[in-house]
Length: 453
Image (tube, rainbow, N blue to C red; front, side, top):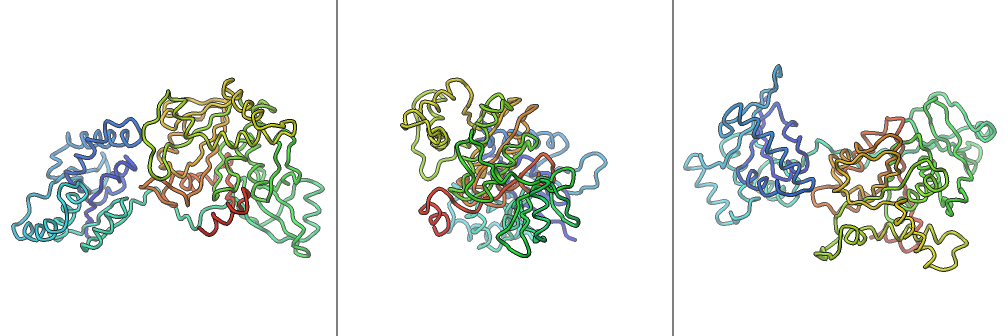
């Protein structure tokens, strides 16, 4: 089998600093333009900057083993890997290849753009007869490479099949007497079922499909009945459908330390998470406080600089959280006016019962005995989600919510974002629970918009 030559775009390295380790049995070529772009990003204090600095350190360590212009082996001590990493500007090519490259690029592409210089390197290697595969997370650049006849791929090390994403529940047809049994004993054993811990099983009567029971598979291998009246008066809300009832069940269970909620707009992901958090913190004293965070990724054109300190800037990004909190506070029948619910929300923040934090500032922290909600998690990379979850201290519960069909990060999609990646990687753990919510409950208009637009 011939050795492949993978030419990596900058965004692959920025997406995952470990991407170099994914091609160890083949050759990796980094165009000089990629190194120039890494140099620009290394000053950033966000995830991109951290990844850029880590890649640069990795390359510097390889430089000590040999000349990167000629290729340095990626093999560790005792490894049989044969791949190597080369940094090149593709300037040392045969005259006829240079002529061909000039014909293609000088008349069509601007060489002032780093993307086109990267593409030229890939094309030069292709014309030299190498088995080149161009790897980029930039869709437009992949289109240009494909038009030039190059093999192209997205970086798929941390991808899942979104169309087959674990939903968190399945339906079983059983005899009516088994449904009667689970309502009487609150627990039932059904032989031959296959599922993950904390997966829900909706038992439907074979005689009458309107008769059903919602159960959850727990560590003892038994199906436990989900409270059909799960509308704790302290929450001031009631689940409006099966999916919300199942989601609330795992949200209110402290034994489930990580909860992932996936669903389109209006399905109640954030509202349910906040409702459960308020109940567990304020009324059950299970956690000391609530920490809410969202990635700072704007929808559409950014409005630019915002005045004020960190909290004032953050308040603009957290407005959806405030909206949900005000709704929950106003749901209390004793609140007759909107300003009362708003004041209650302000008091929760002033008293540090709820803390709002940017994703950037979570790195490096330890978060013990907290109920942590990460909203819009579909805009995070798998590595960013790993960084956040690894902050969980003793007694902390993490909840990730998001809609993989509404991604604003240009280098992520429904299959490569951190939320769906976490669902698939963590689904077998007994401390993880997941629910995919399908039905929008915000309003009829919101439901139709999510379905048709």
